[in-house]
Image (tube, rainbow, N blue to C red; front, side, top):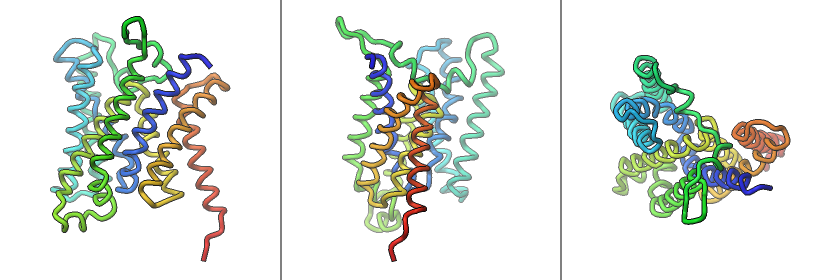
Amino acid sequence: MTIEAWYIIITGALIAASTAILGSFLVLRKMAMLGDAISHAVLPGIVVAFLLSGERDSTLLLIGAAFSGLLASLLIELLHRKARLQEDASIGVSFTWLFAMGVLLISAYTGQVDLDQECVLYGEIAYVPLDLMAFGNTYLPRPLLVAALLFLIVLLYLLFSFKGLKLMSFNPDFAQSLGIRTQVWHFTFMAMVSLTTVLAFEIVGAILIVALLVVPAATAFLWTRALIPMIVLAVFIGVLSSFGGYGLASVLKGSIAGAMVSVAGLLFFSSLLIKLLTPKKN
């Protein structure tokens, strides 16, 4: 296997591990589609950043995407808490409105340049080895370094926030009665999901990031309700999807991202089938 292949696999594995950790809490809180919402809601932020700067520099676009992702999180919470909409309805209203605003801005103001919703939303993990950064005489892929930094941030966040996230996910009313500021934990979690989605979608694309946020955690949820085993199992499934997906794409000569999602889906449906066919204990 070539070094370029390892760059792709390791980048995918790091992204999968980061999203599996956060995805476990999303699944437990019945907010699995939040990643999909944010990955589309970032579009207007990207377009505004481009219109203000006139450049397609990835750093500026990511800053715009981050602001738009946080705006989506705040809007979802506002509609849910203040307008009393159900959380899934709040997510649906927020991300479709923001995505539509982004499409409108693109069609109205970027007609003369190469900028459309496909080029700003859909990254491609196969291009990871092409985006290199120099470290003396050594060159390493920038997406790999970003993925490693993201995993470290998510891991540190989990270590420092585990108790609050656990109480918020399983029994928010009890947590509130203990004097724990559940709103603070909620917004820090939403901010972390936004950051992860924004950093990852440029590397692996919106479809893969949504799949990695949901499918490994949902698969782990079929096997256990205990939080720590669920997180560990979700991370394992996400990493396995990265390795297996690259192998499948190599055999079929097809899309690497599509293959990774396909492997994750096969693991989910295989687990579901085993659970359905396994006799329940009395």
